[in-house]
Length: 250
Ligand code: PGA
Image (cartoon, helix red, strand yellow):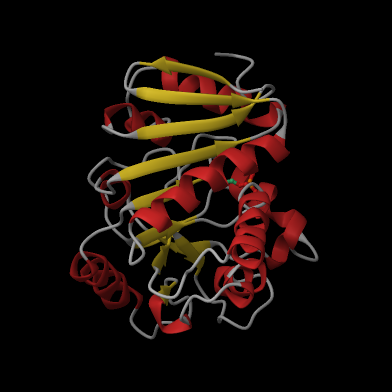
């Protein structure tokens, strides 16, 4: 059983556990894809979206949910990793979603971690989003420090797709995916907060007690770059789907 509430402009769907978070998110994504088959999705990596991606794969297999006209733009990529590196976000997306649904790979976009000219590549990424007509539905996770994508504390609300340094905390948080911490890249390409705030609808997923402080600060604290997710308070259509633990400090 979910509990719905609204704090300011932000809508909450509070679920029993992370499995229900995935199911509720899948309902929103499936409905949006059925209503607009050529939808532009903004997608995210990390451990939180995996359950949603599994649900979407099931809906494709069992109900024929059709991704043939869908396009996607991912939030971020490690600088220095090519798409066939197992820790790259392109590899993550292919193995956790794209390889299992009927999306055209040419319609899927992930920032190029191996770009010869990363600055130019960031600008082209922004242009490609604009040319596609903008992102209709954006999926987000939330970092323990309130980052969105790789927009770490200090990121400005008008920031665009760019190269950023990762904080010590993010490097430590992400070391679990690498052999050791020294292998975690120190830089990444990320969509900016300004880019994210321009998306038409946002769904942020958070599960577990390690997210409860970040969730509470995003909603209850003042809106400033110390907590990048606090800028979501200004978005006209943003829904947080959380489990009970992640919502326990609200
Ligand atoms: P996680 O990462 O889903 O692996 O917790 C979320 C994030 O850092 O944005």
